Length: 239
Image (cartoon, rainbow, N blue to C red; front, side):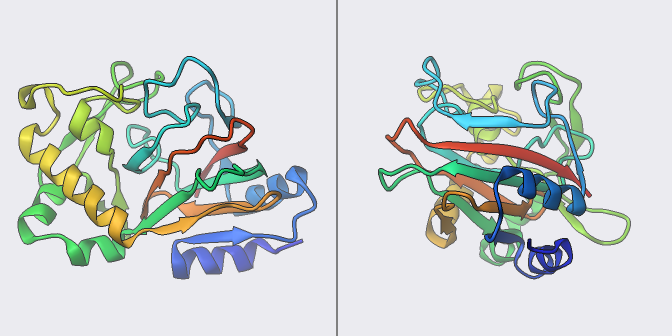
């Protein structure tokens, strides 16, 4: 079984790790528990099944087959999950369904001074627990700031900045005055999305493998897929 120390070292260096040589989901859980503590997700459970569920075809949502644009997970949680993990039971056989990642260290080098100032300056109200962008007490912080020890923390949601909702309808087009940071925030999100598509790392997690990444450092997204048999389980992990 892979050792948590080795996975932590890869996470520190690269921001993410793909873990193989696992004897099933139970061993993956044991490894994750050595990395940190599980955090309850939107429904109060520590496991979220990332599978296709009918009725979500018009949303950018984990249980749809649609593309999900760049974001960090649960930006309205205090604190946001330090690590995110996906255990793959069955990967899509259609060639889609990639998990895409972009390191903040790369992104910062690509943004203009004005865009970086927008990330680090205005305080954005990120809606908190409650299952969506309309409920829950918000966490009001800049999108990028430093902890007391100097470690940067990124909170970002393309959907929130462009559609005022985490799990936005595909046709959502609210007026700029209804967006959290107005037109400037939407423009930033779209540029980040363009940079993400250009510089991302694409990972098609093999069956029986575990992908873990630093959720406070890495943006992630998902590509569209067609294979309804795709099945992953998502975990949030505290430091």
